[in-house]
Image (spheres, rainbow, N blue to C red):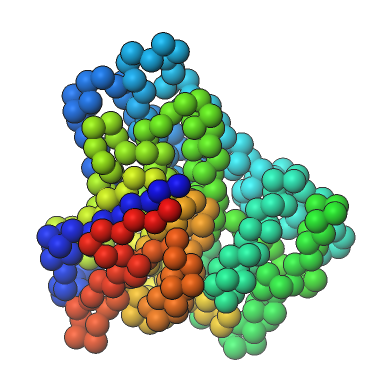
Length: 360
C-alpha cells in the first residue's frame, strides 16, 4: 500500500511557534477538507454519519456514476457502520454482556475463552505493548481509577494506593493461550480496556468491508482523533487534513494523505484539576501517574487505524526522543509531535516526514 504524506511550508508557518493561550472551548484534532461534490461530477458522493463508542463517525464515500454495477453508497455505509456497532457490542467494557466484560469479570478466577478475532486483537495489543516499551497497555485501567480519571473526579492517591494500582497493571500479567483462545489474569483486580485501539480497529474493519464492495475513494473518521483513508477523492491526488493547533484556532499543520491512517492524542481537552493543577487523562503504565512533561499532542501516521490509534497514545507517553527512535526502527510509521518550550511557546517536530514522503 502506498502512503503519501505531505506537510506544506505555509501550513507549518501558520501552526508555527506561538504563545500558549487559554484553552478553547472546543479544539478538534483533525479537520479534513471535503471537496465540493461538483468537483467530481462523474462520481456520486455520500456523507454518512452515526454514533458509536460515544463518538461521531463520519464516512465520506465516492462511486462512479457510470459503473455498470453501481454501488449503493448509503447501503454499504450502513453495513460498514454495523461493523462498528458490532465491534462496540463485543469489545466495550461498558456493555455487561460484551466479551471484554466477561474477561474482566472472570479472568482472575479462571481462563476465559473469547472469539478468535477478539483473541487476535489481544495479541496485536501485546505486540504494540512490547514494541513501545510498555507505554501502550490495555491493562492500565487501575491507574486511571485510582487517580479518578474515568469519571473526572480527580484525586491524588497515596503512594501506597498508587503502588497497589500499579501492581495490577501490565500486559505481561496477562496469560494468553492461543490453542484455546483464552485470557487469564495473573493478578486479581486487573481489567482490560481496548479504548486506546478500539476506534482505529473498528475503522479498519469498516474500511475492509467497503473495499470488498468496490469503494476505492473515501475517508472514514472516528471523532476528530482517528481517520482512515480508502483513497483520495476523485480528481485529487490526496485528502487534505488539517491538524489543528489546540491552543490557537487560527493555526494548523496541513497533511496530505492518499491511503493509510492517522491518529492524534492530547490532554488539552480531557483533564482534571486537583489543587489548582491539571492532570491529563493519559497515564504512564510504567509509573502509575498521569503523563507530565512538555508534549502537547502526539500524532501517529501508520498503515492501519489500529496501529495509529495505539501509537498516538504511546507516543504521547514516550516523548520526542523515543518517538524518533521508534520511527527510525519502523520506517512505515511517521509522527508529528507538538512540544511546549520553556518560554511558554511550542514547537512542531516532524519525524520521518519531509516536505513530501512516500512509502510503500
